[in-house]
Length: 86
Image (cartoon, rainbow, N blue to C red):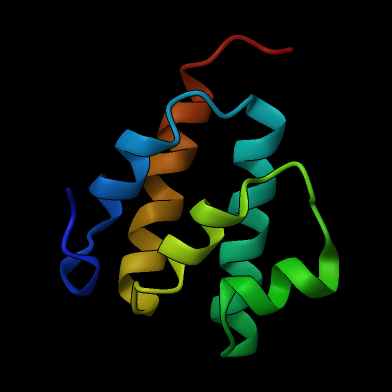
């Protein structure tokens, strides 16, 4: 079990292994918007949508600071590039 106050991007990546390519790209969009707008991933999820991304993943992202979110986005991008297109 993860201590939520010590969550790292790798903790999220290991738990989102079964997101589709589309969901992973959507999560990256929400992450970049959150960093750009100085808000949370949850706020962007509520505003933009992408209802196919599980809310528990969105909640985990909100425990990361901006650098952690950008690291997560990088790791998601690497993961997406290695997946076959849908």
